[in-house]
Image 1 (cartoon, rainbow, N blue to C red):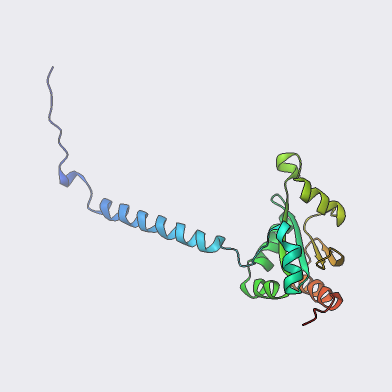
Image 2: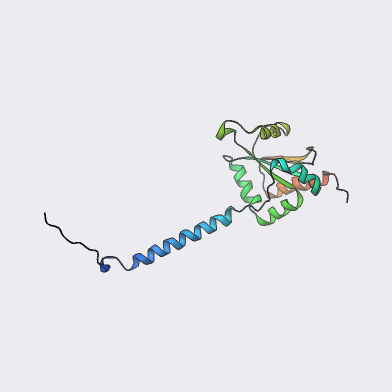
Length: 167
């Protein structure tokens, strides 16, 4: 059996190939960095269990944002309101924000605390935003997403109804 020595000569590798590999690695690293910064939450979401205490301490009402992963209007509201830096700043200043994600479609049921909260506030559609005082009394609500101005009108209305904090 005859063996042939086929060693790869540097001339067989195109000159552009190492440059292309380096360029692809740089693009991949930049993509990872960009996606991490885009995924950063601007709204300072608070855990459901901690919200009432934080509301009592801060004097702010609680904003429950009921959504679902499969919900198109929820994604629209997320993009237009919660991923907008100015809107997120206003939300963080005015309320204790709590994101409540429905998992019924994906997992067959929700955790008991989410089920109880959805029953309490009669959540029938997504998104639903409920603004409540620290004791859980609903001050205002919005079903569906009707745009950023309507969202902030609901927030403003709730602020007017919220009990004033004594200093």
